[in-house]
Length: 438
Ligand code: GP9
Ligand code: MN
Image (cartoon, rainbow, N blue to C red):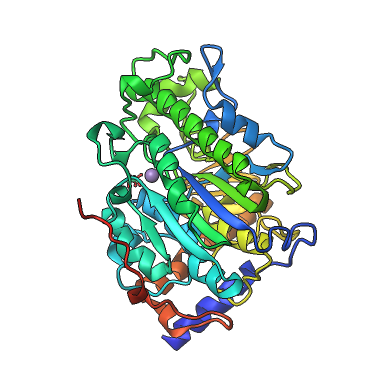
């Protein structure tokens, strides 16, 4: 165990990068609000359907001069979907290869997650707001182990059947009804709002439809519905921002907005192609990989914003946020890096082994007859130069290593043997969320 831990520690040392002096600590002591956009893909931003923007409000945040936006930010989830995204954002370790880490290990593993790190280094209080039942994805156990003070699940919101759709409470109502809890929280707080209306099969009640917005009329109902629920989600975020501005809370808050994973699957993408300006005939796995981009934006009223193009992923969020908050990640075991560091290396590995770098998209690992695309042009590379061979082999090796050490750490619960200086292990028994009873 100690030997494994030491290997992991020396491996993750390379992820700990020098600070960006313009950004390090600019949000020190601010509240943090993380908004999890369910199944929301990057291509929705700026997209017009029948002449109208699908997500006008998110577009305005995306382009705001005080938003740091990323347009090559890839999700890295596996079978654990939402829970994998949550795990990466909270811990900067990957999900597991064969299921959901939350479900399989989250009930008993030791976490060094954002809520506890922020409690120990910045006296933060923490909470999650979500309209589904607390037991889904084992959240009610996992959040205790991560150190969350509060978990406001479905039980805390309207119990009226017509206020729910799909997995639970409609997004607009979830945000509106969260405010009374949020207002009572000790500041600074670290809070996460997990939306759910924009989830397959993307259903909406007629009363929630915006009749000024006409969706597509493709042969695929999921696609047509997706634009409607995404449009609804956009309005829900706008309403929440209206509150944040009116209340003045926005002034001392940093808002993080991200999409957890794809909403439309590869089999739906061919039908989608013309809507995103591509041809169904030439659509291939390069396009499918590019569809795995999701939004990542950080907004705060005095932040120096701009759209950044480096390849980045969910694994990099926590180190980036910690550094913005002026908390060094140097003692922590994390598999991602601060995206704002001048030394950031722009590449990511998906849970299925696909690798994306500035230059390449490597599917299936070249050694095993994989396919490699030039990421800029989308062309498949068939005749490799010596230089390309070397770079691709290096990336393949780095991807494998990163997943391997994260799995070694999580599958053997090795964090229980390692406590960084300045960190106190979580005592989960001090939390009681009163979730799940109706
Ligand atoms: C359910 C929601 C959806 O609570 O988070 O989970 P997903 O199916 O996307 O993993
Ligand atoms: Mn999800």
